[in-house]
Image 1 (cartoon, rainbow, N blue to C red):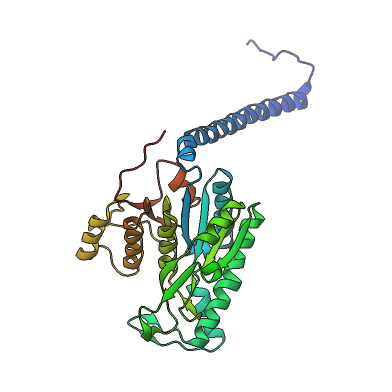
Image 2: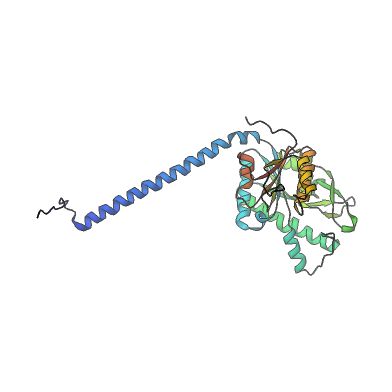
Length: 323
């Protein structure tokens, strides 16, 4: 019988074990480093691919209706604020218009104020509109401003009453202090742009007699975007986008096609006022409107700076060519 002995390394059993563990750790570190390098390369490629979109939106005005999940969850608000600051940093002029329905409902309930409804719409009496203004201009507006400032931006909170931004009529007097924008003066927004500020607008307007009027957030955003002739109106919501009769999300659609979907019933319920706002804005001079899923992380950046998008784009004019 022939016995074979391992070459004596002088390390002993424990030394061999240590060297073996070190070799394994070295291989693992090389593998981790390779994975990290791939991530860096992917990040660099994403930045490089964004260049033509950054050039397209340089100095563009983008109006964003902020609401839904993105406004409720704290981490989502921080992420949204960071995206807005990045937009401003690369030369875009964002305008944020926010809603606040759930918080208004909670405050009314806390104060014991009972609301009447007509055809599903809240009747806003004088006491109710005071609460609405307190919640929108006070609590919600300043929370968004603070979130943007925390990320290094310069946000300024205003309402449609400031600088005569939004003068409203009462389209449905039976609803009380509810307004429909009739005159938009974007001068205060331009002044904020010129000083490097990001406007955050609470959807309240002034009536002809100076009274406060509650305005639907989507409607306010659309009217402001139209007055600014914005490059984009982004309506953040909690759905994937506009769907056709088979339930498939449409990535691009014209106003006429959208009207057909409303007529067929494919677009129904809460999506109707959003799509109507988008159509009015596009037909009023906004280059395109997008109904996008605000639950998607970085949805605004995906929509503006990649070719993937994050929702349904409504336009009636040809797209501007990418340089």
